[in-house]
Image 1: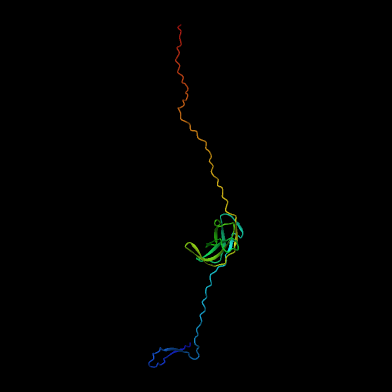
Image 2: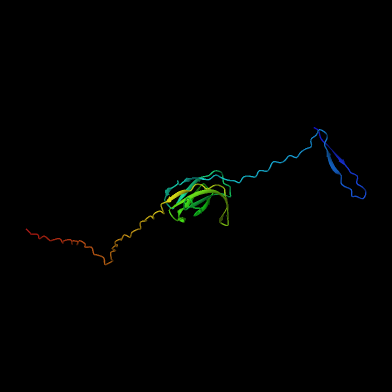
Length: 205
């Protein structure tokens, strides 16, 4: 291995002038190549996190449902972080820009209560978002996936009230209570008196 020699030369300074520090110079021997600086590769900027659009599963598009609500179900790729959620939204139709209702879910399902909605026909969709809870409110930060398809739900309306049979009052006949009175005498059979012996007359002979 061939190495270069580093020599230090001092330039005389005239009197009356401040003395300069020694200047270091490098001398490359014949046949050697001066080292060159190797440029560092640029630092890669991490791409923003994203997810594909969720795929809706249940209820099917245009399905009629009844009762007070329905369980919405979908599929989504990847594992959500603590500040990532499924954004469930309900729309008046397929093209409107503003949702009439929205909520978050950390599972791939959500119970939709119809009592807070008006009408009997609407759409629903799901997307992945980043957001946080602050003071009991939901704070939306950014969308991490495209919105899913919008599927129709046809709601048959609230369930019919069930008639509960009312108990009927059946009259009970009054109970006759015997009244108190003097005791009733029980007839007794008379006892026959014993007969007296009868004297039989005798005759003398």
